[in-house]
Image (tube, rainbow, N blue to C red; front, side):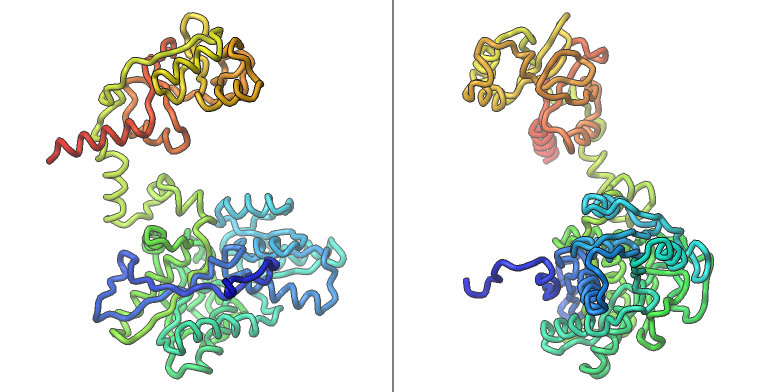
Length: 484
């Protein structure tokens, strides 16, 4: 127990992230003759990304400069740096590209950030819509505020990345043949390259960017290089902070490859974002092109958490709509969504007829009915036997035991009521019409957010049955048994 860290502050937990083998990730192709791939899990920093390290050092420099702790920081970037600075209790205005998905926006708002300015994807340096120009205009309006980004090279981040390089070398016992990382601002690439090459002779630094990005084209600006979906890496130009020669090899990765590999990482237990998918895919490409084999080790920076991408990477519908799944993953998803039910509907579940209670029935009688029949819930009907809500056994029993309800109290006072059904219930639940003709694939979707389904006729006049996810599993087990 002596090795367990004592109670500390959030800032003291930044760094010392684990390094894990990527052998079990589907598509890596690891064999006894292939190179070893390992991932540095930077998403396990408390703020969910490598930018926690950067934020920590920027805050230290602000303190040394005498900047007030409550000074307004105007922060530009895809969002991870802003999340990290908000975690360190700084007051922020955030300049975030349109490409950034909504999860980080919601997290920033929950952290107390109210001023978020969306900036144009691919805005070029010197243009009025570039974040640096927008940031300077905001700083001019707020005396004492400070503009913060990594692209302009305004912060000394050498020590920040020296610490990361030292961790990598320690965890690898100094044995590393290549480092693969996604490139955005260029700071990590520049400083990690210096630090690792000073310690390990011949180590290769591989920079990863999306297809159409122009970072690897030194001193070339590509105003059309703005059409990619992978977040947190890539630019339409080489950023100022990226020193020429820091990268030994550039690899561009398409969106479908990046997103599909990110899904594979998640499946393997590595809950990282899309830039990590691009980096791991690039690591495999690099090892193949460089002829690396057993005894060679490739380290990949796993930059941020998959939890930043609930609306995109983690959404099957979004992935399908943007054609980001490779052939194998697309086939698996289609079989999962459609093939396993093969056109079956709720009628095929062969559910027993529903047993209901009236909204005027006493709660005690409803509890007795559910207990006797081993029901977890019972539908509640009102006038003309129309379904108006439901009552759960656990809630009803707890209300009676606590004295909040008498056994003689009417069910309508304590039932969970569907929206639009009238009455004075404990809470209100939106009604989703489910009939015997509803496809099981649609019912499965319903069960992603609900625990029980009440089946009615199309006019919602009568409750015909009750279904749970267990009924779906029973159906699949029965169907699979018939296939053998």
